[in-house]
Length: 270
Image (cartoon, rainbow, N blue to C red; front, side, top):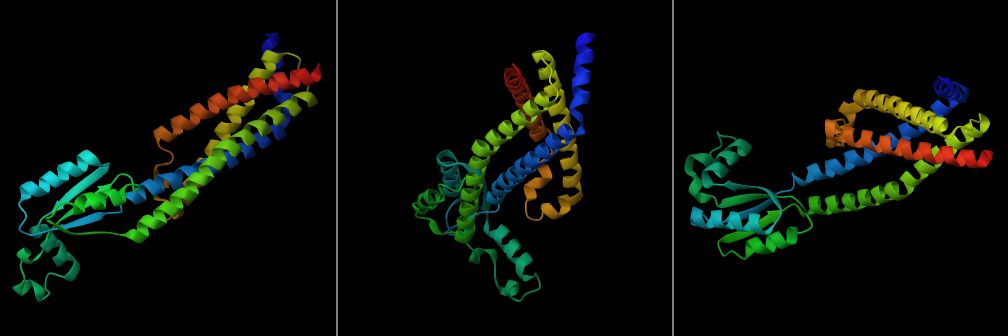
């Protein structure tokens, strides 16, 4: 009973300002994590919009085209390959131009080439894919949006720099601030029981992170429709997979911060 009483007295003595400090810290931390995750996920979704089109001689038998598809899948990281027949291309052309256009009165699907629509999983080897496809003599031309690929690489490099900066400096700063915040609170309201301090710290950090997460969730839900226009992956940020990763991270960080700050404050009080 004395241990439980000591624990609650320690919680009450630290007051609302310690909670506010941690809630603000966690809100800032969550906001940065969510932004980086949304940017990274949106870039991966952008890859799916980058297509490579291989135009094939109309007289090429389907067996050779299917062989090319198998070779591409065996040699590269490919998400999807769609074989566009002459009939498929003809119907697509009707949708784009309009079915009532005069061109369809005298034209026919035979006038169009066959094509492959290739969606790569990664863009680093896109030049190798182009060279590989052009080695087949029945492939007449290969096209893709070079501007989109260059823009993707620039954004990807920027996001990677931000991620590294956040992982190395942000996480270190988060731990230092958390430890010092708790250690100073213990110095202001001394408690010479290290186990009690550890449990107090875990309670404060964990409840603060839950409150901060709920605040971020409510704010994000209210502005979600505006954000997904620029960061489409934001729609999937609060799914079960991401939530479990964040919960695990904050449980582990709360334990580490709580144990470290309790030992530091105990040493300073000696």
